[in-house]
Length: 423
Image 1 (cartoon, rainbow, N blue to C red):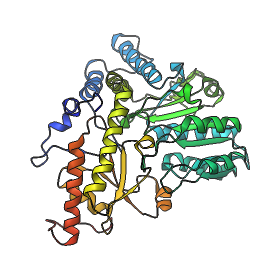
Image 2 (cartoon, one colour):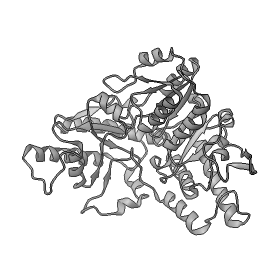
Image 3 (tube, helix red, strand yellow):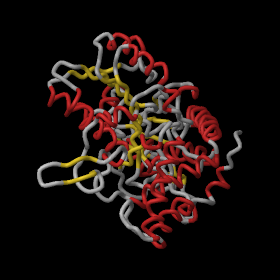
Image 4 (cartoon, one colour):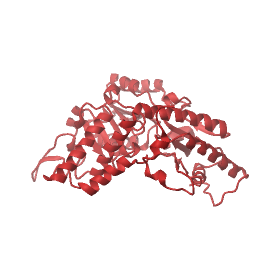
């Protein structure tokens, strides 16, 4: 096993001190949002209790401390994803806002009628709906890379779509729906050769594997803080500086200005041109603390731990849960720490409800990937997802819990309360 001790790591997460009916929480919903360690909680509390002030404004001790901590988090975020210039990091509330920023600012200036944007069938709604809105406004075309039956992107389909000379190619680094790790570097190279700019949704990649945006060769990269052990309301857009310089502001107001007159305004430098108003200062500082926490563990160790755990989960569930249907790539080499599954004849919401009685938290639904579920032929699935605090005991409890669910629905067990058949 890689040098990560989940039991030791769990000591950093206060939620594991809580008693759930005599059980420790088996938290298997990290793909939705990750738990928060004490260093992150302390960093947020420290700002709120010791040096609360606005940033870039107050010429006094706490104001300067707040600005220094906020901008230090920007440097940390840049270093974490290999950005060459921390001024290329724009703080946002989440990956969704980052993608909307690009669609609104870059897209509305550069997209023309009949231009093409290439997406994929794997995308989260956050990397689909903004482009739908933009294409409708501009009378542009959306095309989609198909997936095969194992949930991998069909590279032949991708290459055919690149012949349309798309303006933009946007795709997820790691599928939040079924865990597919896409061949990002190779796809970026193909798209760039076709003359497209490339946006990568890294919300599920940054928390789990080392990312280097320069090595990937993309133009835009986005991620959310709350999936990377950080606070909600935090996240980042990285973009090449020359693109940011050319893009108009996303929102107008304070902070994003240099001079304002009654009939004209000149804008601030990047990245502050895109950070109108008072930001969520505490969340940005907490994000920096979260990235420092993962850096101390080592992202290679994080990936090795989750790779081993995913392999154990696939093997254990297939061996001990009869008839379970698992979606996504069969190999851990191109699958992140996500296992998506269904139990035939049992609605995913019922599975999640019964598992909750065992203090096991999974996700049930379409995971903000309804087009992907249409491709899978399902309206909903169950999803278990892992992080540095997850271990084999969580997987064993999940397998045992699923067998109990099967016994309940086979009539060999008794549900102690009504269970929703469809929600």
